[in-house]
Image 1: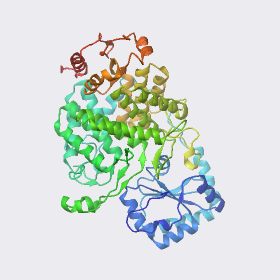
Image 2 (image 1 turned 60 degrees about the vertical axis):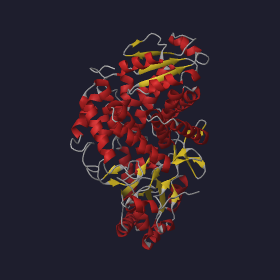
Image 3 (image 1 turned 180 degrees about the vertical axis):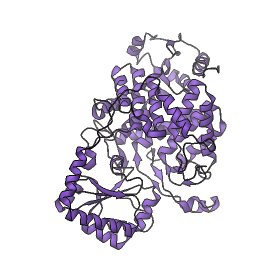
Image 4 (image 1 turned 90 degrees about the vertical axis):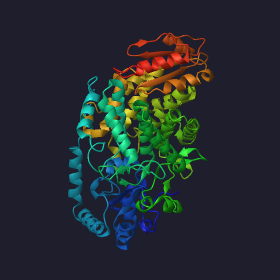
Length: 590
């Protein structure tokens, strides 16, 4: 098993006696009465590699850490829940802990002499003032701030507040939000496009379009191989930080597709197509049909002219399959197959979801990650909710009941294993490793928002009130303080929209094989709350009866929006026209 991943360049970091995060390592630290040094790294992280090649390759550092500490190494991507609780402001993180896992101090990158000086001070302090140290830790625990009190957001109040923040943070010269370093903020752009579609206000479309075009034409985009780098070190998007993440490319692919539809911009569609080409060339395994996690940052490689680049080995790809990122990519490619008229992408997407379910799902435990030939690391909320989202997307696109059934399995797991009765969902299940700061419950705004959206969609598809209650509960934990997350509050506003606005619900009735064109036509329309439900009279008779819809004949469609449902529409062209009329922004007809 490849437990630890060091810099791909020559180094001696493996000579440090690293342990994996877990009960064995902390028990060893307690038995030997040694402090812990926790290194949090990432396979794509440039400065993590530098630290491996310099600090952790220094013989003095190696000897000191092995003699006086229990060294523990954690991969951020594989153990995000550990990173969430111990990160010291970036990667690499260097944290010094008690044997019980409490934080003493920490930093990010430390050159050799800085680490030696800090480590020697920690050892001396731990040996001579242990009683005082533990007394202070107990006092800090007693004063620890509990999770924020819950309060429901005021109906209709969330999006305007977040949009007001985004307007203030918007860079009118170069697009995007804030100054350098500048991150793409795909969720914020999705919210702008959603509001443009719902309200018809041109400024939201202008802000989203300017930003997307600036990113796609600037240095954030790899104009040789395609795909987006992680962020820009400059305000004008000209100089990127060179790692490429599956997570970011999936999110940007979707928002490019939505921008192409909402704004009618072929330039955005072209950028989406080049992003797809990059993903399939570098982040896709044609054998397993899985999507990989990331590609390394190699400044020297990316600064080479294209001809010289072609002669060099491309930067390392992390071949770990992370359910959350792989599912997000599968969902994005499913949408790309329709918008870009590339039907082969649907087959790739569905094949990837099949791989994830067959290899990473464990009954009663949910989804995990996959590396070294086996599934590992189940128990994280983010994996469950992204897979739930992708399965719902697959169900809408294909009409296959299997995807809905699997989505419901994960929804019930989320409700039963992650839910705080007072509101919100924890990032790990309730009996997850109670080690160090993992004993502290945490709720992530992005995971809760995505869960709320997925559960709300399930409610509209199934009519099950438990899903609606759970969706409402997922948003409660952030109802009073979502704005403290800055541009990341946009994901919360988008989820709140699913609970505060009626979806544009298209119910297509007919045998699955006869309604494929109907689904494709319905899903070619951009609307932020579009929901397409396929009801097969031979399979879904009970649900059709509950809804008071015809249980025979077809194909036909019913369009429900803004408090009313249409009469049955029996012509495909009629459904297309009715959808365009329903989805058109105020002031603009179909």
